[in-house]
Image 1 (cartoon, rainbow, N blue to C red):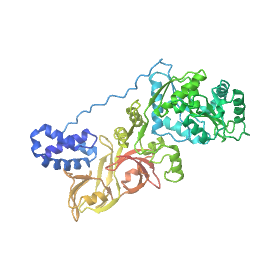
Image 2 (spheres, one colour):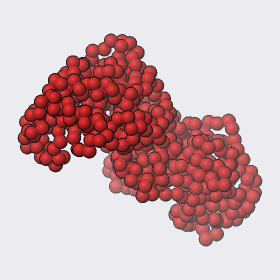
Image 3 (cartoon, rainbow, N blue to C red):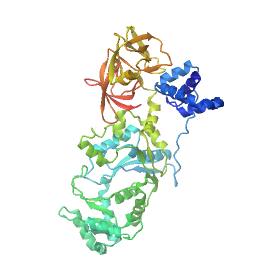
Length: 547
């Protein structure tokens, strides 16, 4: 019965990327032999034991065991490749999409969803994709952020037909504002912010609303001069009792008297998000925009502004935001974290910025497939890291060479251990092998393995079977498939460090062959996980990718 269960467990593990499921195994056993239900209380502990044993092996070992047990690997049903839903009002070759990041931080995986969908739709219809920097807050923009956005999107594989900047259109904005004032669609307000907030909440008009165009134009010209020291703002004149509170005379331009990285001190009055993004959509001839639904209530205001200026609005498709569980994405939080040393930088492994994911070993293909798998819907979900990791694992598993490394190492002696070189394939199916010299009876294993193997036998992967009694002894070069397999490092080794996803460094030992690795190379440490080489030199540092 145990042999039959083991065969089913191995088959289940190979089918599910190395992790057998107890319930699935039990269901299969009952399906094969319904009478087994009578002994279910006896069977479940055996299943649990064997599932734990098989899940402790890596996928390569499980597949090797499957071959010995003559289990044929079942073909997996490949999920249908995600297809973008059709957009309305399409003219092939005439579609123009745009993605407008604010260069106030490094791009993260949430930004990537918006950028990727706009890019993919432009490509789908043979259209044009514009990368637009909405850089209307000189207090936040930095050249570093412009560069990070461009570099990050290039790494992913996005291509744009042009790059545009809001700051290139400031004279056009001022001309549009002049038109709004002259047409009595906008006015200058000098009320304190507390009063404006209260009035908007209660639906009360302020006295500034009743000024005529001549007085508003005079105030506007004063706003543009350096001598103006007041707190004037430009507001749309709509309806202070509108059901959509966004429409209650919103601010569309304000004074920010700070030098801008691109325009220096040339401008001091800057358009707000709604004025800025809506006019650029029209000026760039954008036909379709895909953006997150957090801007859904602002759509009415943006269309209203365009209508008042006689401009057309693109088709807007709102989608749910992409949220990763416990991810820190707010630029303010990250900047403060970097300042307080909570984060080492924008590429800190605790973050979901593209530079962080790249440094850890996530690859562009996996990020794109993961994002597209979340669909084009308004529903919002919080995704576990494990799902993102599963997309990455499917791609990097076949290209990553395998090596030995032990964290929290314990030195043990194995009596009668043969002194010889052992040959190991660089990865399953590879023709290339490497040698590991065994020059003494001392090896290093993890502390947790050492404590769990007391008075048991274990297989040191590719090396031997050893007994772990009071004295540890060599048993055989053959490794019985029924015993636990553990990783190890010989007495000839090197010290390494691994930066973990929580920002902490773990130290350990690795086989000397890692000295031949190149910076940026992806590898897998047996029973530890995938890692990316960060530095090879005085310090040998890896970034942990995932299991």
